[in-house]
Amino acid sequence: MMARVREVDAVIVGAGFSGLYMLHKLRGQGLSAVVFEKGDGVGGTWYWNRYPGARCDVESPYYSYSFDPELEQEWEWTERYPAQPELMRYLNFVADRYDLRRDLQLETTVTAAEYDGGTNRWRVSTSSARGDEVTQARFCIMATGCLSTSRIPDFRGLESFRGEVYHTGAWPHEDVDFTGKRVGVVGTGSSGIQSIPVIAAQAEQLTVFQRTPNFSVPAKNGPLDQEFWRQVKADYRRIREDAKHTPTGLPFPPGADAALEAAPEERQRVFDEHWTLGGFRLAQCFSDLAVSNEANETVAEYIRTKIDEIVDDPETARLLKPYDHPVGTKRICVDTEYYATYNRPNVQLVDVRSAPIEEITPTGLRTAEQEYEFDAIVFATGFDAMTGALLAIDIRGRDGVALREKWEAGPRAYLGVSMAGFPNLFTVTGPGSPSVLSNMVTSIEQHVDWIAAHIEYLDANGLQSSEPLAEAEDAWVEHVNALADMTLFPQANSWYLGANVPGKPRVFMPYVGGVGAYRAKCDEVAAKSYEGFALA
Image 1: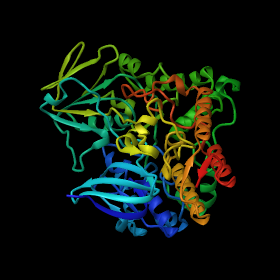
Image 2: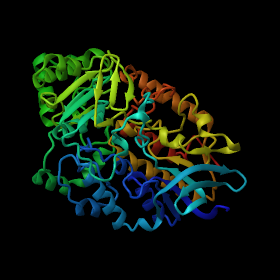
Image 3: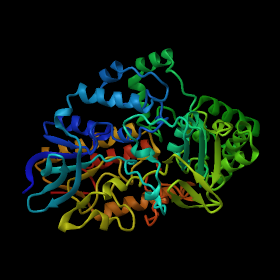
Image 4: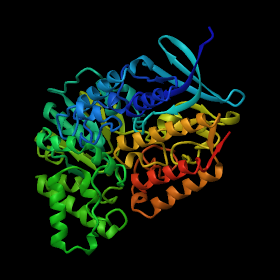
């Protein structure tokens, strides 16, 4: 049976923060659009990441849309750092408030997107319970998220395990109860660090398998202070404007003083202040922490000392202390009682760098040194970040060239928003933009607004297509790499570089120049009639 074909102005892939706002924005410009979402509800990253303890590491007043002053006054946050269920309530509220559901097609997987140069249309193929469909659109906008393609390492024997298997990035919708169970958690990145304390409080025995320790700082989470919340609401417009021009997309600038120029007692005071304050601002409290190894080591040693103070067992504390990467070169984790969890009698830490995991067995897991029996294994092993969701779709641009082929040596994009050879295809917070180094919602809104304005410019000037010039794309990629090389970021084997995925090209993907500088560049490009784009 032939697939049904329909026509719209724009196809949007993904119904998270990016996709919902993109739909609302294009509708406001009088365009027809459809959002395809593989899940059975809105939420994007927060739809899939519903593991125990899942919580945003950005404070709730700032991790929210700013496009409608009425929305930000109407919504009430309850905690300083929003938990996954509250974020889902918020995004569902947004979907209903702006009547977005009528243009959402849920439980629909986008399998391919192919550009037809003859018609200047994208043919987007989807698969769902209602059958295979093809949607033709002038514009194809990938709102697929940076952390939406979870991955489990290819452990030998994984399919033989007779117990329960979970991945933090694809958690069941129903409650999972670990009471009385022997549980193994593999991985101590952000999702591991958030889930381990919650699982430990339930499980009879929890064994954590750590290859690389990560720097983590306390969230100091709790009910949202109502006086603070009242002040934020009264000053929201200025706060939002400030956030647009800082490096992080948050409404507080980084420290202006250099750690190496401060007296030791002053450094200690500033570190103590930011540790007590909570959140990842500790990594930005001095101006030289991201560019000087010597300066960075001062905050690294501060965190290591805190680990010694919190963790009772000296050997466990030693294993938890990172030495192989500077603070902040992997996204610093924000936790609730993570280090203290290792003081529980039912929690054990296993170093798999010295004794690697060799296989999953029918009853558990075996390392080079020992075999462990479990009722459940939780893989907190992260994502094929930033490019995984895009390359999972067979995207083909001009002359049938595949995006996977174009990105064989690493992702290449102009401004992180568009690729040469792929007319009228846009990515929200794609490689080459601040994205994961920033408050994602600030960066998402900036990208959506810029893409919508670009489309509006095309329509106002009778233009049919837009794609970056190859030389503009090359220059931007070189600029992104040059900036990264000026910092400590490349020293870490992080998912920023794709280092967690075997065979993935090692390319530093985000833009480290900061949200404010990036926004200024995008505005400059637009002001010069979209300099660097071939418009036809």
